[in-house]
Length: 159
Image (tube, rainbow, N blue to C red; front, side, top):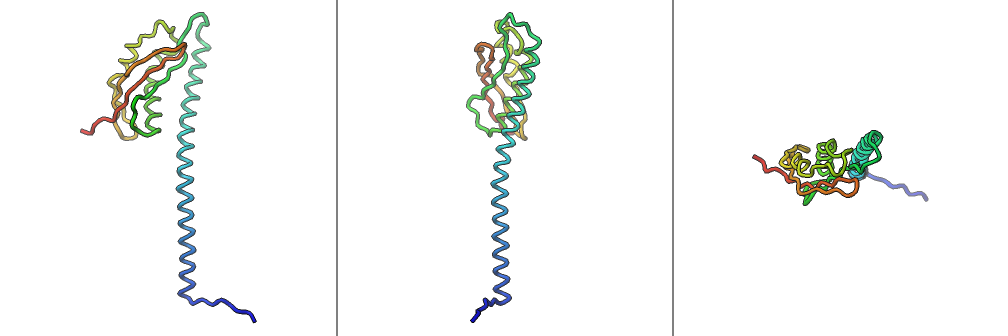
């Protein structure tokens, strides 16, 4: 004897509603997980694109300089005691590097004026993602052909 499963219209509506709700929650969860992965990949892509542009610029400068003297070939910006997200840190480092690289890259190491470079950065205010940041140059150093600039970036107090 064959037994059939019988459902009333109300029971069938509840089952279909439950399945639909489950599919919607599953789709929402998948979207959130993929969104987080996409954000991480987007940050990595922006960082790599920034690095590529910097390396291309350095390469062009290296092609134009004589090989006889030791010259600065790289600018590394380090944020000291930074309390912000990774995207903001990337934008701040990019801003500072773009600000000083023309004064550093390609110049003989002995001719780089540390105090002048620090004064270019010190006291600057920059807006990143609708938030004001105050920059202060902490110190700088040169190791072989790399110029290191240590910057403290603090969020400006709202007025």
